[in-house]
Image 1 (tube, rainbow, N blue to C red):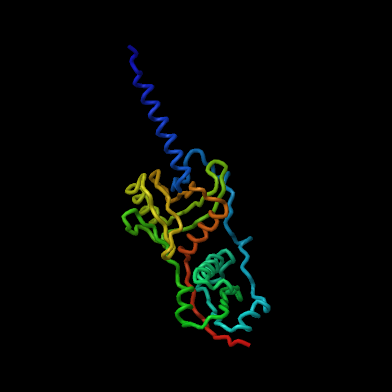
Image 2: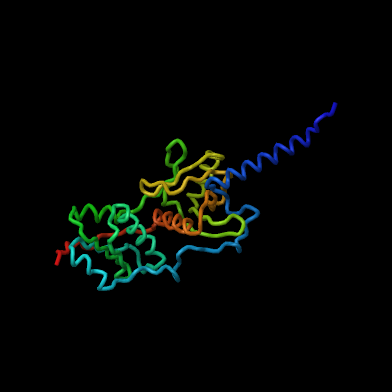
Length: 259
């Protein structure tokens, strides 16, 4: 009668566990520490818009032809920040664009018309101007929620978000938290270890990663779950929108009559 070696059995169980965990990681988004051994900082290839490549559309007279033909509303916003760069203004521009698209205003034109100003033309709009101006220009609400529906973190504690591509993990999004945010997020990862959390922009779910490790240094990466370079950039931009350190003020609203 052969006796099964206990050590071999333990090794087999461990290997099986790691294989199953790897399969689970590949299928689901994961929130992992940024300093795991297989990742080196010099492997990161940023795909985020930055000051050099974040080019916002500038105002062109011909872009107003549609609104001048069919009529609509024109709204001018001003960012309450001094000397913003294109990198500062891009998330705000993209936030307005996504909100208009969700409301079906696909023909809306959004252009930067000054250092701090963004002009929004909505052709064919005939509703309440003050309401739409407030809705599309409101500060975005980014929330981190546990699987019991409790909000444990908001965008004010996010310092930065960066889309990246790495040879070891593929595409992903790195998130840096403020000092207080790092403390809160560390406790949240302890409380939700091997559980799923949910990240919302306003009322829209934008990510649902699993927590596979306690994150102690305030920096982590969302990867896995078939994240592509394009979707990583989109997610990073959404997180930036929810952590904007400035608001948008309505400077003027004008109904444009049809010609």
